[in-house]
Length: 316
Length: 289
Image (cartoon, rainbow over all chains, first blue to last red; front, side):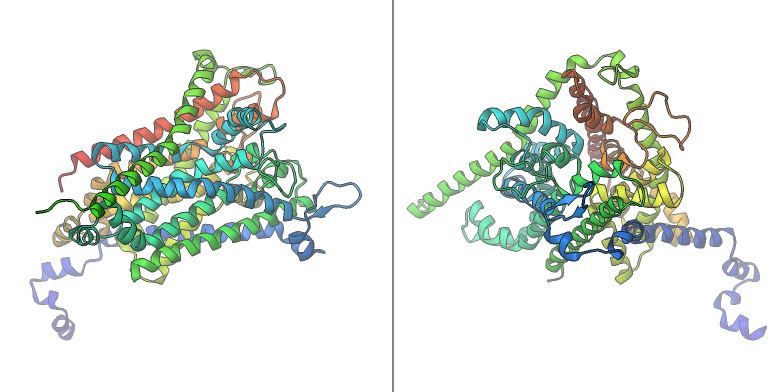
């Protein structure tokens, strides 16, 4: 007894105080309980991301284990899951559809969103800047099904009229829609990257007599290079995974496109259009989940790469 | 003494030109959307009436209103919020107040980034595999809402984390010095100072949840239902899916109807976003530290 009170400095105070210090009362237990609860909240993100993979793999596994032909799946352009004679599951044409639409979208979105980001971050000031930032934020909020509807109801007749083509639902339509969708997100991430460049870099260059544009071109852009690349990559990921807009604006017909006026079909749209019509556990159903695994893995890689590139500069 | 040389003048001209070009690009980005909005209002405006908002679709959805879809979207959003807000706020409290700076915390942050980046249709497949089949909720509001909740979780986490971190460290230290536990500090000092910021995140999540289509297509939203949902285990109509259905799946659709649905959906979403932005600006103006 004597020893413990020696070791515990609190016990050398008055007995009442020592009890108060040692007490593991209600508050102490509540504190520990909350710590456990918020920790569970914290790991939930990890649990969900693993859960997503497990549950999709669980449904799609049957397709991969029974007579799965790697060669057919990735190199055949015949996606005929409901064929009466011989079902074929080749996603090449779907990959080509997704790639062509995303590629065109990036052609539209990258220059415009980087241009807009530079303008908002470096040239605009005060009320103009605030207004542009809010506009970009609101643009990013428009739901994808509304974009799809715009492609269907507004862009479609417009393309037919301007280019004299029979169908306006094609790579061009979906590419422009997807570009407009991805641009605001890329703009705001790119703007953050530009804002992250310390002001003293700009001041140093301006003190040397450089114009605002020379400062941007020679100092700010090289310094923000990685952040901008990250923004572009996240835009690519967004375009790649977009579903409703490409379902409604591409024309949804299986093609390896040779021009921007060809209708195509995207990976995501195929799942959205066909899952409702398949019987649970059928080979077609499992094939759609296998496409889901493929999409998950690709976007996972894109997101990780983007994060890695962006973090690269923060450390360096 | 300091007269501009030819080189100076040239540089100034380039500068002007670039500024004009970039400004033009920014406008080009906004202009089509402005035009589209005007067209939506112009073509969809006449369709919207009290009757349109509060009656059920009739005549194979080619006439009547959108009430079941509107109500369904509200149900989906409410159930999704009940699931995701406590979880998201807990995750944000952990990351901002407890998490040590180590590899595990970094893994959580990477998981959040990935959760936000996974395609919506993959979330839909997860919802089917997990909630509809494995947990046997069937295609129901519950399954659809949980899918939406997981999908929009990063929105709440990121917004809450930002507003928690905006509370100065000195506030916490002062509270700890008074002998308060970590939780007492969070509960009495940190959360009250961050609550408006959290609210902006929640409103943003409402907007995201209301607009999503792909994740609810196979988990609980139906093309058309004659009856309103009675419990969370029923299917429901939803505004976003309704827009998809009336614009692609129904023949002989009068032109104004899909425009009307699109207009209602976009107004709902943009109103929520504007509210969130307004709240954020009010908060910034009020901030004393």
